[in-house]
Length: 105
Image (spheres, helix red, strand yellow):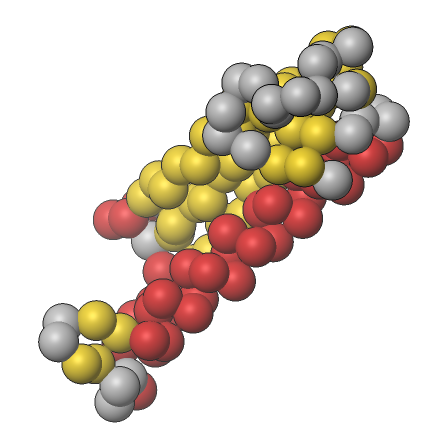
């Protein structure tokens, strides 16, 4: 399935707009605190453990997005937006959300 931030796919006209699809993953900040406490791989101000946790959350959100699009019979998701939000008491959770428009090409 094609997933893109653009609103058009060159050479592939949109035949039908099937609706907005989303994927959300919420990760408890305790995960990040625990990671931070055990992180030994900070190099140049970057933490591979943090980046890996964010990458996993983003991947899961995209899997939800594409699954929802497949259920609608979509060939692609266009206009995808990726957001990161801090939620909960004292910023205790991180939400990764992706949304876009499911289309039939």
